[in-house]
Amino acid sequence: MMQTASYFHAPQLGGATPRETEIIAFGLCNDRLAKAEGPRARIEALHKNHQLWSMLIDDLSSPGNALPEDLKQQLVTVGTWAMVYSNKAIGEKLPLRPLIEVNTNIVEGLRAQPSAPATDTAWSGAGVTA
Image (cartoon, rainbow, N blue to C red; front, side, top):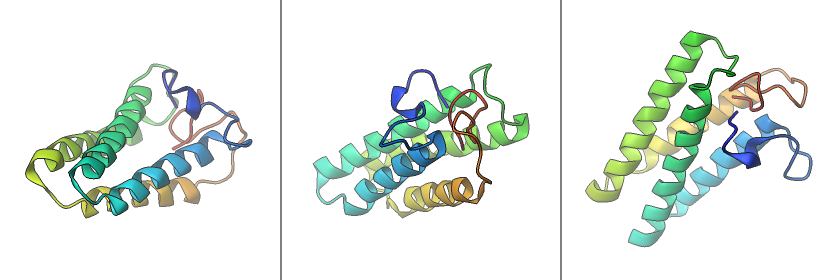
């Protein structure tokens, strides 16, 4: 998906494909968001969610991303919302459920994709799936 996030490049995590790595990353973010009790845990979970979406948007905006333009723009829109909401939720104590639901929808979309070669990804043809 992106060149700056080395953990997204296949294979890693015991041979996981880029798509599987993305599913794991969203799952970990959702787990942190769901279990965030107390201000510090909440801020850390929101920060990780922001980081994940920032990396994904960075990849979606790269010239090597092979996704259709309309899909890239839709994902960038969702990702931008998730980043803004994550930042606002730190100071305004907004509920975390909307972020968890968006991330869950992305995971469901990733899982619904037909299997692809290990070098193919859903986010881009250059290294990570979405």
